Amino acid sequence: MLSQQVQTLLQWSQDFVMPLPIEALEKILSAEAVQGLFTLGLWDAWRDEESMQPAAMLNRLAQRLCEDLDENQERMLAQKLLSPLWAVWQPVEQRSLQADYQLIRLAVRVVNTEVLQDAAGYGVRWAQNNISFTEAKALGLKSIECLEKDNIEPDNRLLRFTAESCQRVGGQGDIEQAFELHQRRLNILPEDKEWERAVAAGGLADILQSRGQLDEALRIRETEQLPVYERLGDALQYLIVQAKIAMLLMEFKPPYRSRHPEANQLLCEALHAAQQMRIPEAEQIQQILQHFDMQCTE
Image 1 (tube, rainbow, N blue to C red):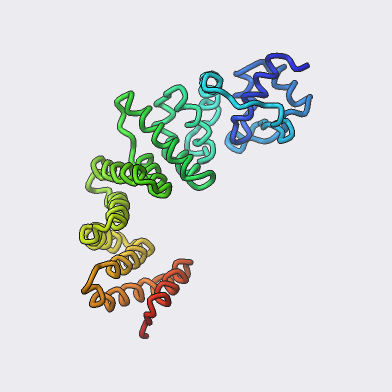
Image 2: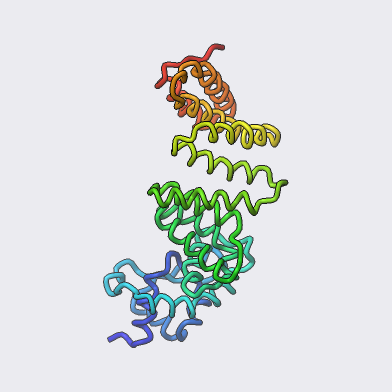
């Protein structure tokens, strides 16, 4: 029969999303309990890619022995593990986005704003790319809530990836939340952060276009994005915005057909740039041109 210590640590280990360093795990329970899980084959030995130290993760076959953690168990785990894990995973510049995700999952449970200020944006981004937009949205909004409880303004990175996740989830309330978050980004970004402000403005334009507010969306694309990317020499973002403007122009009601030559020209310019850069967007733009029976002249 497993000891209570071993049972507890086994139960908690199902919540680990990556191998965790033994140095941190031994701060939760005794070294003997940690070793017991290896001896019983319930944990597998790994290397922690963050600290390059020995690490452990739950054996897949052992998952059947675990029950879901309740809220109190989750909070207790966070209280015990967060500080030692945060200490081991330093310096910050050597930490992966996956590690940030593990950290902020713990940090929101105990409202640790020091960790959230540093890791929340990147952790939400990792969830966005590797788990689901629903998970990223929930974690991002919870991180923002925790920071605001301590009167801390969430940074642009956290606001951006949370807003993007809300947009991709796509419910009406989520879209409204995304719009508010993009607006907050513009409110906190200084004027000299031109590229970041252009990206935030683009998020607003996407939502305005989805609402049918085409004139305002077009204004943002033409005045707050395109000139910035041209001035900064960001050819990729420039061609993407060109293509978005073209698609937007074709949504206008009559006399929308009179706008087709302009849309055709923008798509062809974007296609030419994408082909020169040899990027996947070239094929996507080509498909749009074919869909609308448009052609590009040499």
